[in-house]
Image (cartoon, rainbow, N blue to C red; front, side, top):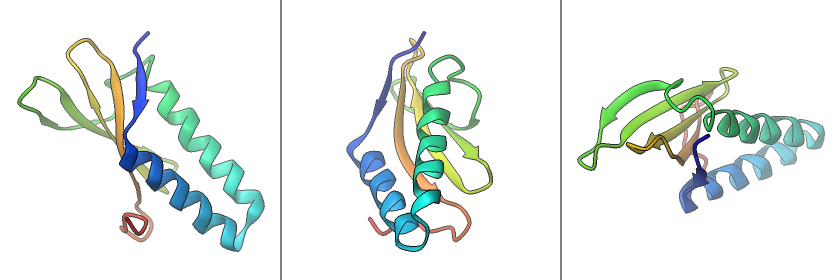
Length: 99
């Protein structure tokens, strides 16, 4: 099974998503953040399941995975199938949660 890591930016994106959701619905905050973390964890077993976006100079593949029509996980898969979550985007508004 592949190794999974989160970039600093993706971690901040997830925190901002949680804060935003908490501002209008505390119950939904846990549901949505858990769903995002679970979806990222599933990439360890199926790293190539997201849509291919680009091949990076180091041979890594840039991919994205739409999670319940709400958020997109942008990640890279290394040549040995390790996964790094690079960014989490709210696709409902097409905003990148207030960097």
